[in-house]
Image (tube, rainbow, N blue to C red):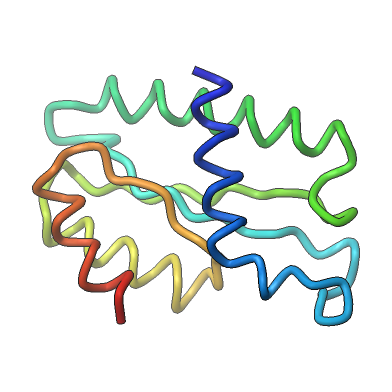
Length: 121
């Protein structure tokens, strides 16, 4: 699970790599925030819990190795409640309120389909 989570975090960071250029980087102590929209309620919470464990493990390994460009990685979680509408609201909140650089998730296809238009805008 950890290697898959590291791949997710790495892919998310590659997709938004322009914001990680050293000349544009924030304070080195400022974490790189990655959002994760996962089911923590609504019937498939076991999958969300397992994904969280993997993402936490991956972030811990990345941070133990010095982070990304010297900045720690912080994963901020949001519950999609296994429904499309809460998934979309969770993603909006992660981007607008929490200022995440990238978002990983969701696990179910219905919820993922609700996130795609937001990611494209």
